[in-house]
Image (tube, rainbow, N blue to C red; front, side):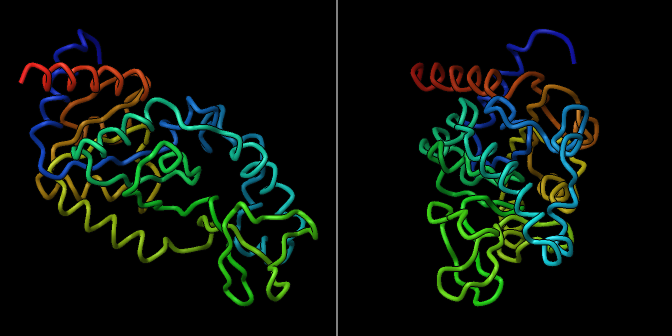
Length: 255
């Protein structure tokens, strides 16, 4: 979409300021600037790694082999990432009382790192694990690579990261909270998501059916752009949100 962005930046700021229950719905694009490539696409992680490493059946039958790849991708690589300006802008909008909730498809824990409190991780998180034998939860800070694959300190059972593997259902609480937030929303800010991953892609559509306005921030058009998006801001998440935040600040200062 071409043309001057300024009117759309102003419109986005006005909609956010006048909203009663604005939520954000984020995908891989918001974390690209933190050094995390998307999983799919030309430069996606699944072009470099075999996604079978997070198939539940493979993990259960070959845990050591799966954990070798999981350690490299999700803990040595993704675990080094840090929140960027887009994550921090959403946290600031929450602190201002404008954004009420963040629903993210990402498992990188960067929204919380940036300071967001009301976050639903639709696909789970690398921030915690649990024992498949006794169910004991464990924060990632306590994760040890000895012995390998990682074992529960209580019973010695196999540890599994708390993100959704292929072959697993979306956690009930994450699904229920996401639906509840979509039903309450009068504005959704879509950031860095293609709309291709089901059932996550249904959440913004649900909000739209309930009458919510949709602001989309993406570097390229998505499946949402010509179907449910009301206002499209084309560019990086950090650049667009920084401009929106500046506009909000100016409007608030002007009274």
